[in-house]
Length: 327
Image (cartoon, rainbow, N blue to C red; front, top):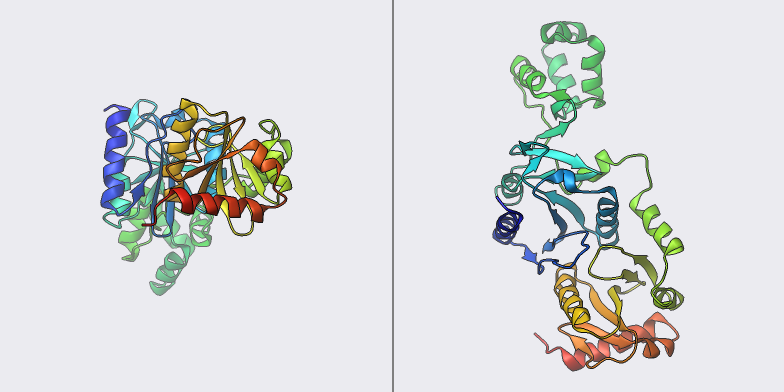
């Protein structure tokens, strides 16, 4: 299977599940390949045939984008090292859940969430500790007795009940048979980032650090910040930054007018439809048009004349009404 086939399969699954899907991000470098939305669910999907190809910098930007736009980051692939990804198993890479296409299908179309997570030591299942404790007490079985039947320590059973330790698949199956109860907790792909998040900087901290340390493109991002926007710069997305004020979120591109700029603006337009944001390209120099699809083009000299985010919002709205027909 090639990456092209993999992307085609992913798009097909997402559309079957009712998602609208952006155009493919085919501009390098790229932190994600597809954006997709279904009602309140927004996904930033990175597609890699081998999931071990994800690097920390790309993962950090995916997490930042997902946090800033209220979505979830997801890595979809076919193999890890020299093994195929197993169905209905979640693999974590830099705090991002990684799955295969079958798991994507089961989760979003069949409404069957995965139960198993992969760790360096093997495959594990998260146990519902409250259910385990209630079932053990109902059968009048002591911690020691249950531990003895499983061949584990009393402390291990106690950790299972406290929710402090995942169990191997074999142990969970034995427990469920002994106690005649379902114990496995399902994995929410849209929320499991919080469970696996490390001690490092939170997405909020990452965003704030980027604002402070960014190297603006000819001062334009600083200008937007001065107008009242919170600015998260990007290194691998099709846009230069995400700019937010109290009412608007802008996918923000910066470039001189060129054929490459038009290609990026068109892609930003597609992504903005999915993320339900506005799309703006600040042009260094003169522009030959005022929009590319629903991406509004604004010359830097026009930005110089504005005194606040409200004035920029008015300019964007004016050009949106002028150039984009009402649905």
